[in-house]
Length: 165
Image (cartoon, rainbow, N blue to C red; front, top):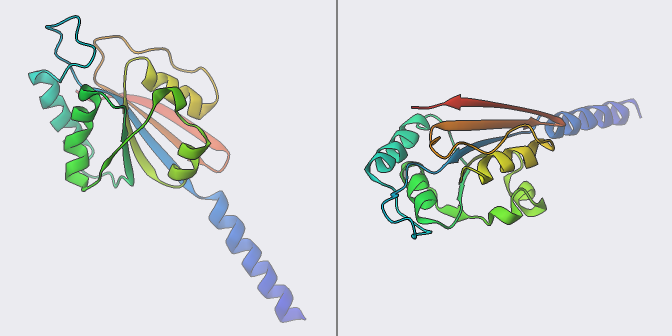
């Protein structure tokens, strides 16, 4: 009986420590600089500076072991995500920003390290949704260098923004 009790306590300790220490990390960025020559084009490609920034993002993330990379289904976001995805041998998963951080996304990304590429209004909104509070406002339209990092361990959520030029 004593051995059974010790085994039970050991198993309970292992199970609770595994679930409470699971960490999910989200890296969220806005797409790189887009081509603004045609104001009527709702789905522009990246311009030359944007293509360079997309490569810089891939270099910035060279030591990050992503499990998944998500992007909205726009040329500029997909083109921003592509160099990083290629360097990690990952497929880009397209997401609908109106369904960001829903229960399916949460389940699929729990305990993983994920890159999310969005827009000036969706990236901060996505971060706010993860945090469960309105902490960040929309990004300025010329801000393509902010990286939001959100870490979730158990019930604890932390976030920070860094500029990557």
